[in-house]
Image (cartoon, rainbow, N blue to C red; front, side):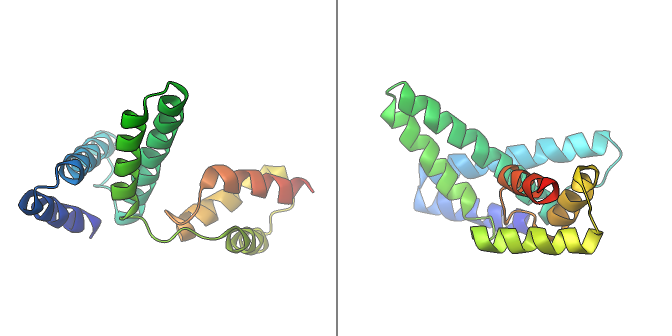
Length: 151
């Protein structure tokens, strides 16, 4: 499980005295615990590994937005710190799909669901999320799905 991998990495970072990795992994653990608490409050079980991949992608997206703001503001040291955190978190995501693989997955999902128009977009995205959690950027994918269904 991802949780075990992260906890083991925390121990390794402590032994190696890698402060950046240690603080990032502790932050990841904290985010996971908060997400579990939210899920429990809604009567759901603790997050699965697939759910955690979504949480990690959200964390990375937040850091990418911060990098852009820090770069615009001339804060190179803070941007570098965020990039290091992105690298640590990204290590726990599966390999990202290439653009042509994403397009093929979208075509397959459209065929599988029998989607005919924009009203079926939710079905297609649901199939993609179930099969490819953590492997594609669903922000970009939704634009491609929209284009495929409207064109």
